[in-house]
Amino acid sequence: MVFSSLVFLCIFFPVVFCLHTAIPSTNLRNVLLIVASLFFYAFGEPVYVLLMVASAFFNYLCALLMERANRKAVLAVAVAANIGVLGVFKYMGFFAATISSALHLSLDVPQIALPIGISFFTFQAMSYVIDVYRGQVAAQRSFGKVLLYISFFPQLIAGPIVKYRDIALEIDSRSVTLKETALGLRRFICGLSKKILVANTMAVAADHAFQQGAGSLDALGAWIGAIAYTMQIYYDFSGYSDMAIGLGQMFGFHFRENFQHPYGSPTIKEFWRRWHISLSSWFKDYVYIPLGGNRKGAVRAGFHKVLVFFLTGLWHGANWTFVAWGLFHGAFSFLEEAVPAIKKLPRAILHVYTMLVVTVGFVIFRADTIGEAIAFIGKMFTGFAFSAASLSFDFQQLTPFFLVMLAAAIIGCAPLRPLTLKLGAAAKQEGELPPKENFVQAALYVAAFVLLLWCIIRLSGGSYNPFIYFRF
Image (cartoon, rainbow, N blue to C red; front, side):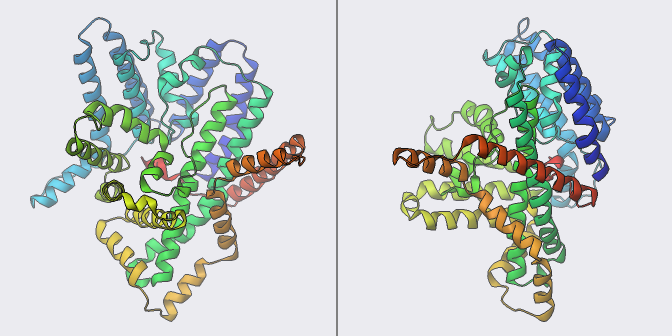
């Protein structure tokens, strides 16, 4: 994995980018990106690249068939087939094991390897067909353009989930400027640094705590593990999103933001407006609103929300812990609506409440079973029997580098850029001279270059963990 990451950084991406820049024709650029994307996916999934191509071709045909056949019937077939493929590869073993356990049967549980990123490219394919059905986009005549949309390598295996209508014009025509390239590269390095320097450092403590098991932990160790994983998953996933957005920008594509400082949210409802935005908006656009949203009364609206939270949890993986995590967040979202007084609490208290819910929720998300999650959460709040062994474990996790990265992670969660812009505007009004923009930009690029070198050194040392969302 370390070798493949270095190959991507030092060979694959530079070669593809240079060729893309040298080719003047958009059509030829698209061909290059398709070939590069298929090679990129086949490097890790040599067989399942055929599944992805077949998925793209099937949905391409379904979109065209809507002009000649019953649109509703074609849509039903397309959605059923996409969900069926996802069900076979991602959930068949899970459901078989659940039924076998519930009914005390001895069913053979199929062991099917999960294609990397299948949830992401399947949801993108479905959104394309549904948008064609709704008339929001025209059916694309070129299979190559549909394939590029579904297989584009920067966001192929871990998002963000991109809607075809958001990049359709850029597939047909786009330009790449030096400024856009520089900004995209800096955004990519920022995301890479989030992953390699912060998320991977947090992962060491989190993995140790969850592997240790609740029985050997005290409250301090449990909180170290919970907080470390809360930071790991945010910097891991938002880091990948930054990398995808940055790479897309370098090739002339502009993806929407996937995270908006979710750990600064005052409520769980607000958290979900800022966390994994592309998935939340997907379920809102293609599940919640089509079911009726809140237009059919409070009871129906409540059911629709429960269903969305259930599906959001299940989307993340074939395990009841993910479902429990989704419903856990749904319960607090309902609580905030049922008790309006919660939102009137001081913002500092609301922020503590939200982060407490989010942190406990991620323990459920990270645990292998619901029983393990309950035991781990129990230790967080009742594990005050400190022993020499448990304290030794705790302090082994609190290395100087971990503490520095944790401090950086906490600071990085804050919406610093909006605050900086606000202070800059206030300084202008008071007649103070703002800092020289050119100097600031130059300093940021120098810092990005230093971070890139640091990341390469860390990667060369073998300190790498796969992205968490690769398995979704």
